Length: 70
Image (cartoon, rainbow, N blue to C red; front, side, top):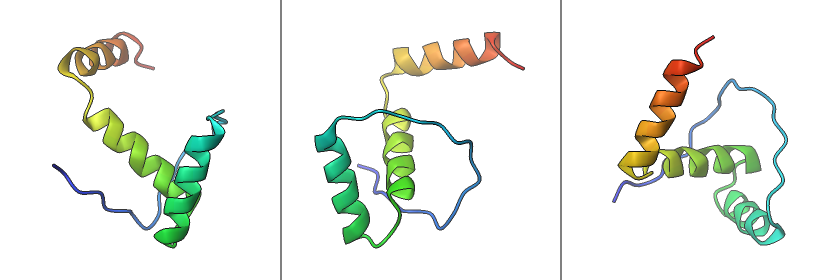
């Protein structure tokens, strides 16, 4: 299984997400344990989830991205 490495910084787009309180509590705890920002931990977890989608969902994302290029 791939391990998680928390990056130092990133450039990004601001979005608002509504997440269940229990998930926020776990992410906040992890960010405090790792002495990093809530944002960094959330980005890492989302990247990991996207990288580990099943092949059908990955293919659907690629197809979507190709048909919605700006």
